[in-house]
Length: 432
Image (cartoon, rainbow, N blue to C red):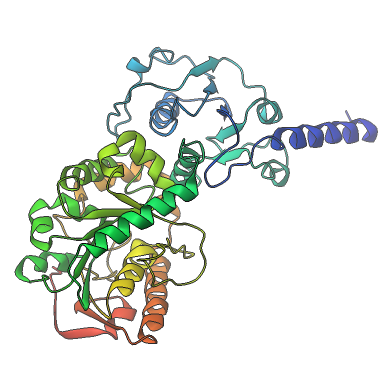
């Protein structure tokens, strides 16, 4: 039956009114959703127990009951456990157990009233399946209240969760957090000897050669999963450790959990500080307060290349960002005029995923379950393009440093073009 144009037009007008009403209250900004605790809805109705288990685990981890009012879900099936009892929530096979003092209030219904109803009723709507066809997508995406957490189709779903945690954090004074971080970093650096050289460590196979080398004549900056290798950490004796990936370091999957566990083990009693992106501070504060006490946050959203980490630490957001270019090279270039790099072997033609890594410093056995936890991230990444972008961006940063009289030397053989032209004499290699 053909619907009269007048009826169709009236229906469209009502939809637009609902959308404006729904999106007027809150905007998912960098640190606050709005005043008060947001009520969260999940859309569409969950259809499988595996997705319910995944969602509940993430709600437990990312949603702080102190700052989130409630989460409402609709189920299209009968689960095998008591959803109303958090103690009975299963742990996904690719994740680790989470211990929290309290869990956000969960409401369970048997019917999902649709997207427009969800937009009108909730402050934020988690969309776990982005294939919905209820309304034209361009209209639905106009709502700032929709948060794409579809792990099967959206590569950045882990960033969505992390940004939500930051947006609902009780760190209301974001600028105060940044300023206190600046003071913490300045105090830390002022207490160190003054060096002319800085060492930057990646996690490529050549990192294994570090045990036979001495780095005591420079600032020492290491990244993320090196903390798995306690002997190597003691040998390098880092001044700064950095990490900034929502999948590898801040999600509840087994890989990221192992990293945070080891970071919590090596950081509190050491002389090093941890540097990360500002959006992750809320998660550290809630789940790893001892780490948060020694964390310096880098500001997001500041354009340009900055070599002034002593005054203002910036998280450089490149189109295909990685920790070398987002934090490590800019920090090293802020501290010294001669920068040596080790563990940046790059991506060989036969490498899978990003690139080969040092076996004792990368949680290799935990990567398969991490890929299961975030299928879209690993399935949609163009790894060759990513590796090329890493090289191109590193080259841009180093050229900016060289224009200021700085010198960059790669201590290992590398497939990274930007480092091949800046190779030290007799570079090491640990590739098999």
